[in-house]
Image (tube, rainbow, N blue to C red; front, side, top):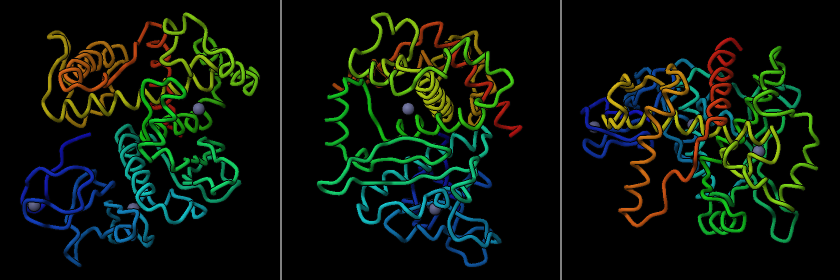
Length: 338
Ligand SMILES: [Zn+2]
Ligand SMILES: [Zn+2]
Ligand SMILES: [Zn+2]
């Protein structure tokens, strides 16, 4: 995530800000120019997304000439999403804007689903299980990403994380994971080179429900850390793809953030990443080994100094690097030609 500045007074502002704390100007993030813009003036080039004044608290802008009232992020939220649960929904919307920012930077295309038979479009549906009713699950199908909003509730999410024995569980991570399933559906499924995928991730035609059942009953294979980014990734090639691709999105954003802040921990031989470089133009080995791993080690050391758990409790063994390479190809090359 880049650093942003107030368009009026040039003071530093964050991606989430809707006002400049220094001069009080009303500001919004404009995805068409990837900058913060002033939205106070009625004759400006941008206006506010209509969801700014609702409980969704959207801080994105729309081009003044655009007839649609909702921004590029809010128009992805399905009308069937739960109403109420305002604080949880606002957190989910904020995480969605953050991950969409990474997609915009990478040049990965996305557009709202135009109907249930539009298999290319994307839609986010926020759900909550009714009290005493059936549980709702987080998942992705044909471009519809469903998030159980309880995942935005800290106490609920942490209890779930502990019960599954996961090192981390975040709303942002959920959205990256489910979006990654969508990217598989969108960019990989019809690949002429699907054999490349199968050689790297395994055969995705393996029985999915049987694989998950086995995972939850018996756990992952004992040596999973040598081959997979997470225990869950070992359950089925689809989940391996989603977990690995989610980590790719995480790394791209984190390396970009470090570059924006001028934090330089890479080995002296490697060229520095420029802010806004999307980090994705670097070969994946350089991104991981020269840029991300030094940062991750630093972050873990700093977390321990602060008395917090490791910020990045994951290993990246060589087979995972090979998988990340395929993810990068799918998102950059296929994404741009889609
Ligand atoms: Zn300002
Ligand atoms: Zn919006
Ligand atoms: Zn999944």
